[in-house]
Image (cartoon, rainbow, N blue to C red):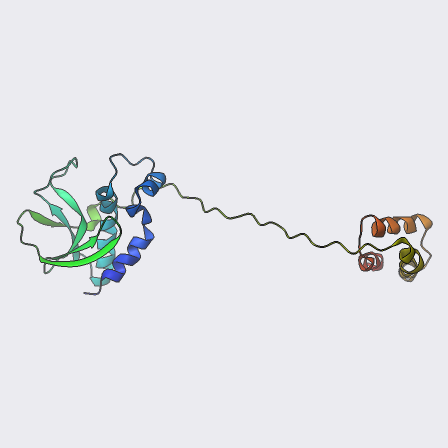
Length: 205
């Protein structure tokens, strides 16, 4: 026997709605009432039995039908919501509680009204339709970039404007027009573009 309590716990972690009725109702709003832990666990126990068979061999594990128990299910008997059985030996294990996984070897079944059944005939979380719960991703807020330091007018006129004019002459082969110098002064002093950005813009091919 390979299947064990760790496998049960791993499966339960995939279906938290089996142990949270509010979450179950949110994910399956069209599922008929009454909804209780027996109902939600009956949707999980076939998956546990299926995975046990995947590890230990086809039909090596079975579900339990208690033919001495009746409920609103039109089929005779009632599916146990917390037991799986080794088919060959009929040892039965409690593997679920209302709060999550369990693992209790309760020995060989002897009640003649307890019958074994395949997981393949049962409804489960894999076969009912759910509404996906959206994952809320916080918006990415851009980090504001610091503005270039403000240059004083005298520095611009006596130093930077000459460097701008020289770059323009080198790139275009003629002097910068007065209107262009005013435009670059506006970019630097009002829009606060960096001196390097203005020079690089002029040097673009």
